[in-house]
Image (tube, rainbow, N blue to C red; front, side):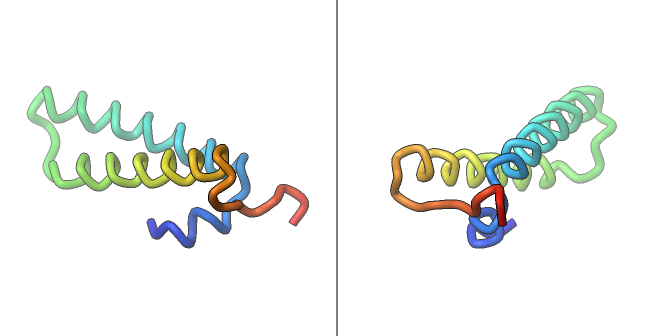
Length: 72
């Protein structure tokens, strides 16, 4: 997921995507602890995507950059 793609999303879409990724990370970690995870690289990718989403949300809070508005 590229930062430019995230900035084109609305605030609601970003928060929904963030919660989905956090849930997926939880499930991947659980499967990894049970030795049932085939692709452990996926955990790192998900963590980086979560960090990107949180960084862009923080940029918006501080007024550094704007994200797409809800109305279009």
